[in-house]
Amino acid sequence: AWMIIFAVIAAVMVLLGLYHIKMLPSTQVPATGKKSTSEIMQDLVNVIGNFFTKKHIVYYIFFIILYRLAEGLGLSLTEIGTLNGVFGSAAFVIGSLLGGIFVARYGLKKTLFMLCCVFNLPFLAYTFLAVVQPTSLYLIGTCITMEYFGYGFGFVGLTLFMMQQIAPGKH
Figure 1: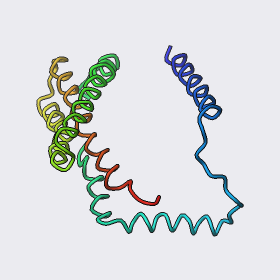
Figure 2 (figure 1 turned 120 degrees about the horizontal axis):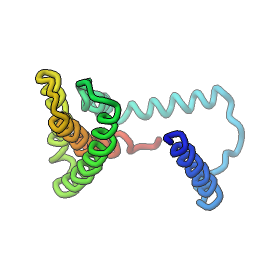
Figure 3 (figure 1 turned 90 degrees about the horizontal axis):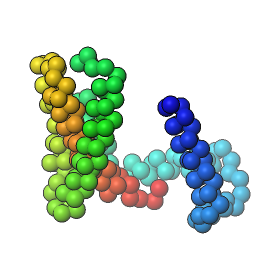
Figure 4 (figure 1 turned 60 degrees about the horizontal axis):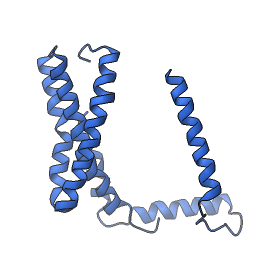
């Protein structure tokens, strides 16, 4: 059944891609001539060099890497699929929406630390699960739902930080 679903999704994506190629306006400026390999390599070096000249870029890169500092229980595949696929996905979407509302209301500068903390709350849940080793599916499901909510809520901060601090520039 999954192969059929993925085949249908793939076909829809191909059709949407063809539609977009045909119907959407092109904003690309055609290249005036072919570039040599050395010119392409020089462009690449220029882009990378320009990226690393951004103010505080090294700090930003470390922040992005360390945002997620850390990362069984005998569940069946059906239970894992239900907890992650249904409850986890819903919690992630709700967390993302609430995180977006939170940032929109108070601004990224004021909320980034809180978003980072909430993003890392799931590690407390998994530490709890590792130490206690509960057998209650409801308790495990609550921790997994908390994980996905935290990821959704906190990922807003990481995404906005990258958009505002890393993305601006010539390239």
